[in-house]
Amino acid sequence: MNNIATYEDLKTEKQRLTLLLHEREMALKSEFEVVKQRLKPVGSLLEFAEKITTKDKNNPMVNTGIDIGVNFLLRNLLLRNAGMIAKVLMPVLVRNYITHEVHDNAGWVQKIGKFFKKQFS
Image: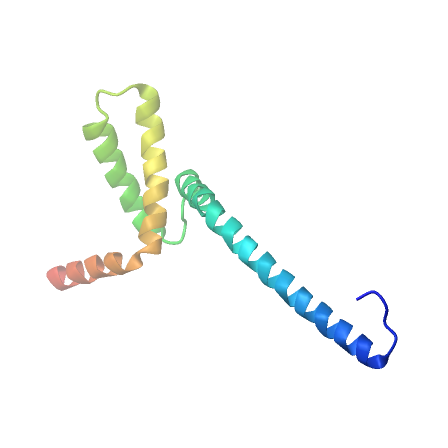
């Protein structure tokens, strides 16, 4: 509307602009959701990269068991004929990842603990 002459014209213009604002907000929200869905794989990749480069330090006893088990399995069994870099780098990455997975899925660790408690009690 170009000219606002009366109070009624002002109210109609305000209503029109409110509707236009609402439409644009909805369009912006839908575009934002599309962008979020497109960036989801990047987020997953960054989360995985964080898991393999950092160690979860919530449970030191479990981490010690994971360290021993991964070192034995990877260095002595699976990578025994591999090069020195693979023998050093792979166990570190696998250990870091497994510590995060154990913390994220703690239910099965508790079940194993209960099993051993029952067996040795």
